[in-house]
Image 1: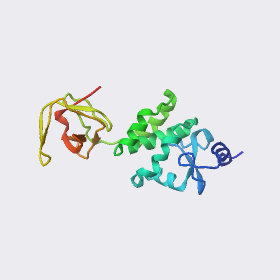
Image 2 (image 1 turned 30 degrees about the horizontal axis):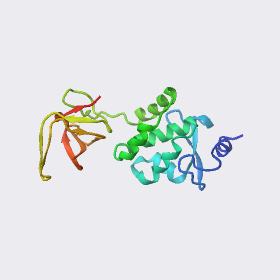
Image 3 (image 1 turned 45 degrees about the horizontal axis):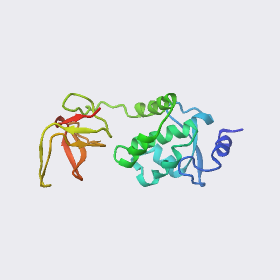
Image 4 (image 1 turned 120 degrees about the vertical axis):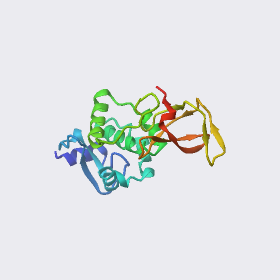
Length: 193
């Protein structure tokens, strides 16, 4: 039985992420890129093109992961985790799903191995006031009162900012304070463990 036949049987002839039945093809997961059913998923053209070119990701298409992330197949779980990890940089709902998703340790290690290889760069890390590295989705607290220009309020010391986003500038983060999305100076934040 070929890999494609095995995946068609496993998936019921549907995309294993969005359940589309059209234009299906085999996608081998990096970093292995092995041609076998255990290391591959069956994807439609839309899912495949957005995974291979993450800059074209349409967040609303990926709401299907709410269901497919629970698939018992490790390759599908890894693919869903990687897509949610990428989307969590800008989408709070993706971070919420990622927080709910439990992967066995070996499956999580496999999922992370693909992310770390793809995201190696020499950019300066974003650090809080204590020098702790901040990541997208972290929760921080303000360590001093900050006047918010243009919004007409002061963000008080101790205010919790959940699900932060990193910016192109390693000295700044984005977060929501009093319902307003703000760019904040990372030096005035402390990561909540």
